[in-house]
Length: 134
Image 1: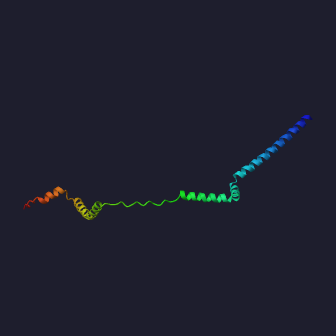
Image 2 (image 1 turned 45 degrees about the vertical axis):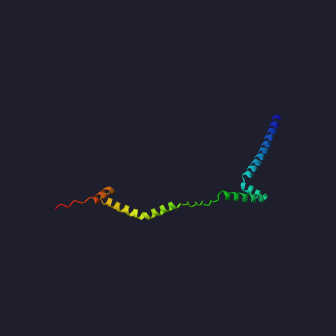
Image 3 (image 1 turned 120 degrees about the horizontal axis):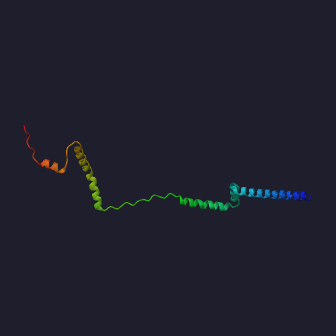
């Protein structure tokens, strides 16, 4: 009989221990759920401290607008030209059509098969042509 009383007491102790463990585990699960429920925590925080949330939103908006602002493109200042450079530029612009026509003419002659060089052309025009033999 003594052994059955000891067994009963041991069973009662184990049952009470498991019940306490179950309660502690339930409380821990409830605490973890509350920590992980971000939506309700955020809602509660906004309801408790609305002025801090408003001020924080304004500050973060200002900081973001300063960080992500588009910068105005820099305008390059016009380089000042001196009078001699301006005159050279005008002269080159005026000579351009003549140089182009000269280049086109001699390029056509070259492609047509006429040999061209400055020295040979000048020598040909200066040298008298022999009479054609009959």
